Length: 292
Image (cartoon, rainbow, N blue to C red):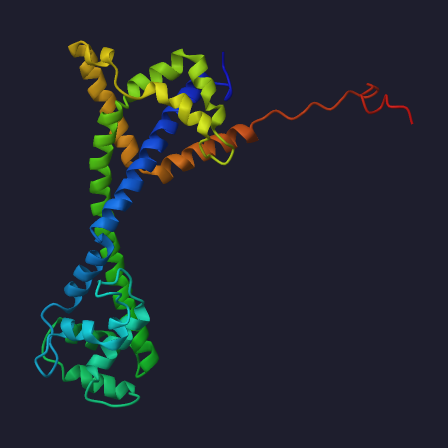
């Protein structure tokens, strides 16, 4: 029996990928809950801003970072005293330029900005700002754009920090979910290979790559713990550990990866359908036999 996809091997692989997708979606959801509970994005931004302004002060001796947070443009991003998780680059540049030219009132020129930065005490922000305005050619708008790019580059690095931490959490969750559900890849492939009825449950896979409710029910028998699973031999436990490791690696790749794999597989199957044969010349079809 070759079944829905025309290949037992392909159907077994699609079945395993479907399980990976379900578990990865669960891990992603829990990961988002953890990030929200820990306010991870806001804390990540706080650390990024601290790294930018660390060791810099204003001429009056006030810490640059504290003055930045107290600036009306930045303070307007907060809500109920909570640290914001996103800051527009224009708000960042506006606050930095205003702090550097705090000795000026009203509109400022490029020369005012240059003088203001020069009056800042020696520190990393002063050095960076002087470097950024050197290439502005006396254009205040270009100087502001350079400051915004500096901020955007810092946010790219901060996003990398956040993604790495999220990957660590996702890996931890993948381990917990894999063991809790006994998602043994070797066992999954064996079951999908040897049981045509179980492979037939893949009919719940929609052309869009989404999993239908029928698919979730049909995949349930290949997961979970029973009394027999605990009465396994040492060799069976070694095989199970290897299967768990494969599942953990697969689930840690993330739900988007497996969604894309399944979507491509279904689209490939649809594209590979043989064309309908045209009737031979002179052959009567149902429509041609209808009297006119």
